[in-house]
Amino acid sequence: MNKHIIAGLIMAGSLFGCSDVTTSESQVEKAVEPLEQHIESGTDYHSFANPDEMIVRHIDLDISADFDQKQLYGTATLTFERVKENAHQLILDTRELDIKQVSVNDQSVDFSIGEEEPELGQALNIEVGTSANQVTIEYATSPDASGVQWLTPTQTAGKQHPFLFTQAQAVHARSFIPLQDTPQVRVTYAATIRTPTELLAVMSAANDPETERDGVYNFNMPQPIPSYLIALAIGDLEFKAMGQRTGVYSEPAILDAAAEEFADTEAMLEVTEKTYGDYSWDRYDLLILPPSFPFGGMENPRLSFITPTVIAGDKSLVALIAHELAHSWSGNTVTNATWRDLWLNEGFTTYLTYRIMEMIYGNDRYNMEAVLGYQDLQADIESLPENDQIMAIDLRGRNADDVFSNIPYEKGALFLREIEQKVGRDNFDQFLLDYFAHFAFQSITTDQFIDYLNQTLIAKFPQQLSKERIHQWIFEPGIPQGAPVPVSDAFEKVDQARTAWLAGDLQATDIETDNWTVHEWLYFLNNMPEVLTAAQLDALDSSFQLTQSRNNEIAHSWLMIAVANEYKPAYDRLYTYLVSIGRNKLVKPLYRELAKTPEGKAFAKRAFEEAKPGYHPLTVKANEDFFE
Ligand code: BES
Ligand code: ZN
Image (cartoon, rainbow, N blue to C red; front, side, top):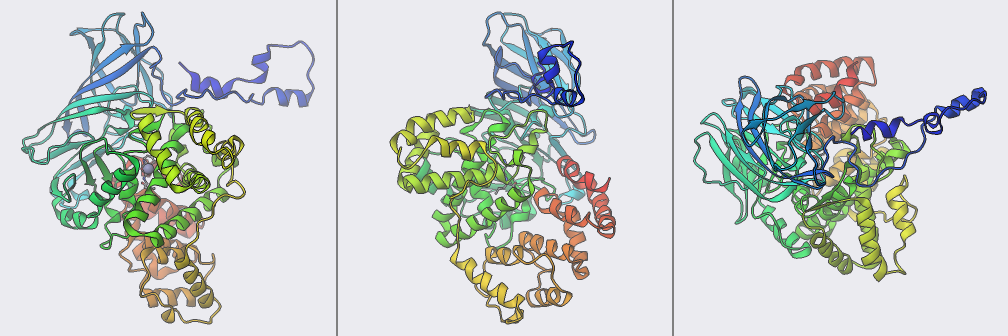
């Protein structure tokens, strides 16, 4: 099953066979151009698995965590169904797994491990015969598993106990469980996790906040989920309730601060249910990770994983929670069938995030966040090659993680905002509610979405919507002409202040910033000209103590300015920032900017080398090329 390689490699010459006509030079050149091959909708080019022959429906895990060896080991028992009669081989995805034994009905069976492919790992081919429907795999993970991070006690808040967390999206579940690692396969799962007795394990499953801390923890996930949502964390964790259905797990040192910061989670859950239909997953809890967590958040069902870098003390960065919660509808309930279809997941979620934020915090904040998102999108449109500006991106032969940019997120959300504006908010909300119910617990392709849209909204509003326009949004680069442009009154005032200050007509200390929220600060800083004078940098810093900002987003925007202008008074803070935060979105742009000059690169390299042992493998991988 080498579909992912074949797709990229078929050459004109080999397709047309050999010709005995002497070819001119230009013909030779033409002959080696790859032919544009049709992308097969629904084909997952990032998995070896064969769900079209046998499909796994349930996984039972019995796993121990060895913090000394940095290994998870134990068994995975997969229950499967035959899609093709007489199919006898089950093909799974793995990456750096040590497969010790494979058995069917307690009898070991033959298996083989395929050749390693850098973006995919290795296939595990198992001879299961034509009648069995269960297979047990005994295995251990590699200490370098791409989806597992092992933290030493010093890398945690409490400094006393080690910590472990997994991050499976997009294709890293295979580095800690042998399975069909494609989002089009959904499984229920049950797990027994064995840990040192003083630690608590939590999973993307039913967690019992009252469970006895005895080193053996049982979990059950009764709804079918794609493999990228299987998640585990182990550490010195405590629980605090925030509402009836919501609570937070974290290390004791930050538990109260987290519960306060995210106190609006229950209200978010309620308004989302009212608008988009009942919450399908029972409880919704948050797990706050140590600062090396490589993302802002990860929507693991029933238990979103969250970076501590958003605990700002003023709820200013809680759009992240709205986002991960929104995935419970757009994503976890209806997800993408392949990574090319990710925009169905992240685009819908980004649209829902804005709507949830508006319902909880009002229209001004909605407008500000929408403008900031739009600016992120514009930046990507300017910097990404045209092919990567297409929502239904061609990912063949590439790393699955390449799909993550502002295109699926913000372009996806803007597309939905246009439809909303054309058919009216009430009609669009009704459409979304129906859509989530219609495709509940399915993984769908872009084509399935388009068919559904044709049969529903386009049929109902033929004057307002057209198939051509929809096609343009999904399959063409750029932002379509006439797309909505978010605006914010509050930001217009910020623009005026910035312009007057830059022109020398207004002192920094005279800018009326008393009522500014974090959003106004971000907009103020993100839209500064590329070059500022030393006097201007000094004025900004001494008036607003930006180098000292405790808000990690504001600090990020300021440090970007500092690096671009080599504002040295901020470099101590910059160094501390880089070595204490592992969230890639916050550190990567700084490394990239620093690497533009030899001196900056040397500074960045020092910070990177110091930080590296504490960074997640994904953050290391995303940044190490800057220092080659
Ligand atoms: N599913 C993503 C996290 C993710 C991104 C996993 C890339 C694997 C690869 C999550 O829902 C997300 O989008 N998080 C964002 C925050 C959000 C507010 C845009 C993040 O982590 O920054
Ligand atoms: Zn997301």
